[in-house]
Length: 370
Image (cartoon, rainbow, N blue to C red):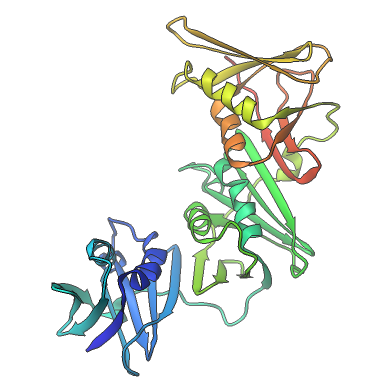
């Protein structure tokens, strides 16, 4: 019973879209599979890891019948990638085996019943819904994702706070040592919601969203789920339970010492200084004063790096240390010409990094002792 006939690349595109969430090791063997549903010419590919589900559709089904099955996702992906890029690929289901035919190549793969595949049940009504451009949503995630915690026992930090309020959407991430906040105007947002999106879902959305597309994303939210729909893709994710820290209290206000520095020279200087730090101690010292930023790093082998950059800072000197990785993260992900620093004359005070002429982004980094 033939399911699909299309070019190799046409089949690869939807399969590649969903296979990113398929884990190589699963407690449920069927989760290593992709669910293929054919309803007439429309074919859906669905992957689910019990936290996030991705569905995408394409019009290359053969016949008008309705068929569903599941097959090992990465095996099918690897086979398609290895096939030569000419002629059509034919995929059929016979005797509980999925056959893949292309030219003189033949493959037969074991299947598991589609009825055993766990799919996410969706609510009849969502608490909040709005639309925004793809590039705006990707921009929001890109500016904060690096501050999410990794495997923190405070599980609510292993995700991204997604805040909607009338006319605006914000994203916040923190690991307890630094915090990134970014927001954007979304006129169609009307409800007030605060939810935590899992780390894996954020990374999948970054992979799937386009950097430059003005096409809209439909976003739907409940207390336990979030759904994104764009192009021919649907992403549904569970949410992280827990109370996210009050980020507004963490972002400093009232700082009176500011200077602006070009991003790329600063990034290059920090990258060079970081060479002499160690994995256990990633600290660099920043000395501000006399219209200079002096960057230094040293290690247990008595090796030392020193860099100097000109800045417009004539106030009393300030000597403070930071984890260089935290500084490089923001400089790598926020693609602007310049970064605005705001500091206090206190070695224990956090630094506030913002963007000139743009109050929609804040990055707070706590100092460290070295």
